[in-house]
Image (cartoon, rainbow, N blue to C red; front, side, top):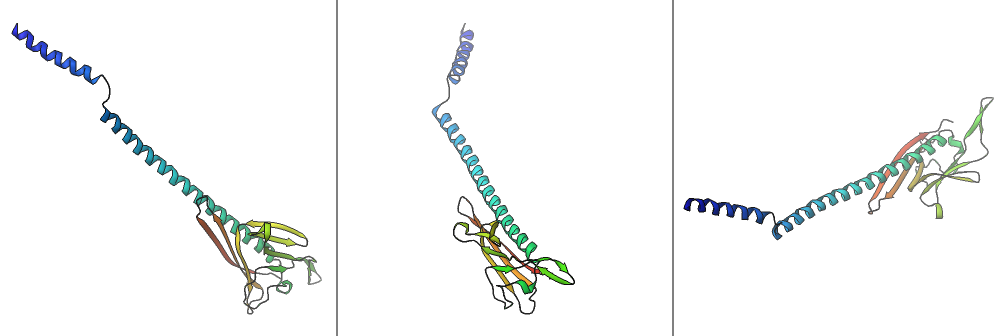
Length: 191
């Protein structure tokens, strides 16, 4: 009988340990789980914030580059149709000016160029249209680009039929980062 009591006692201890482990988690185990979950959640949140910031910056960068490109395209397209003799407010003196006024051709008749009776002017808006590139033709204004901070025109005395143009645009992200894009180009007038 002594032999039977020994193994029974061992089995009773084993069953008692199994029941004890089935009762639940200890406080240390629960706190460790909460801590690990909090760290993982914090890392995921930081990655999300970083991705959102990056998206805002890249989106603003694309927008500011598009606005500079639109401004450059409008100016090139119109100015190339002009002649150096029709530009009225940008003399060939190597100085920078903030607006340009000119006429475009309407055709050629008998070997001489016919000029439009209306002038075209590119300038920065003011007041409610500040920071907008305005194309003024007669009494009609058209907004060509947004966020334009700088608009400059210059002609050199040695090359009066070439207009140098400087366009700069800015955009600020929701977090306050200011992005700038610049385009410097030359336009050779055909006429």
